[in-house]
Image (cartoon, rainbow, N blue to C red; front, top):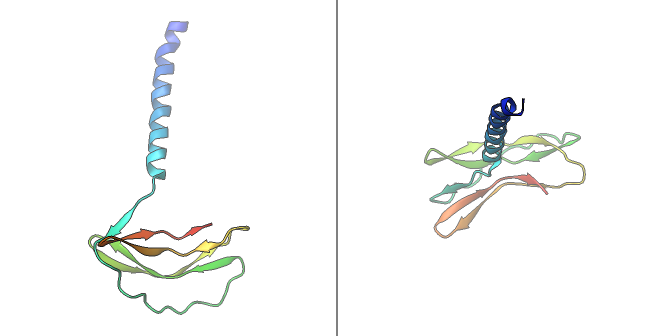
Length: 103
């Protein structure tokens, strides 16, 4: 009986290992780097405050070799955390996007 379980255990181990590696790869941070500074932010009207939400301001996103505007939106609050808006930071002659996050 022991010998008949070995192939099954080996296949199970392979399946588990592949699930773990896919999960780790999908959880990796995506780094966005642009070769030039983003345009000036667009002026957006911020809607009236919503209880239990914070406003995430619109920003420029680098996509397929050009900047595209991403409109602002509401984020559900997390008790005990503060919202840190995303920002472009200079790195030499390039710019890196630091995503918005809860801190």
